[in-house]
Length: 114
Length: 112
Image (cartoon, rainbow over all chains, first blue to last red; front, side):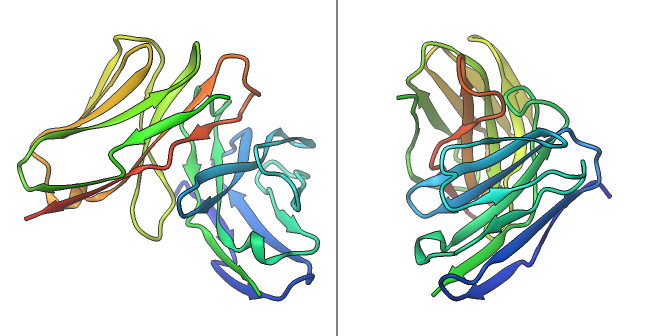
């Protein structure tokens, strides 16, 4: 089954404790993105990747890191999480540039930073 | 600043009562405009892509249309299973490759 998986689905952590949210897709897609979704603000892009070792900032990249060492995986790293990073996070992938191509979204990771 | 505005924020319909959702954008041109559906607790699911003014696409009870400044998602004779939040997104000309701007969504509730 074609899908995007994220782990963990739920995470409660404390300020400053480094964490990684994993994302994997099995569709051999070139593009992958991370979004956060907050009430009243909608979906905002954090980072995206056009291919292995190629990443670029989205609209809200501060406080986040990403890497794309393999085509299928695109982890999101929070080196020192803060309460304002409490949010619902989605990973997405697409066959080509998402400006022209549908994206497939993962199920989401709900992160709470206390 | 490139912006997308969706209206209304919430819409309650009776089953069978047709209506339209609006997505307006303030850019001189766009590469593509997308509609997604999002169910509670799930990731968005792709519905349509529109590229040029005058274009229309249909899927079951949904039809998306595009003009130079806005897009409409028409829902004909909706059913309770159409209840969801509908998101529009676009990438403007001159925008970074891969960078999509999403609206805040319209939450649709269809009562039986």
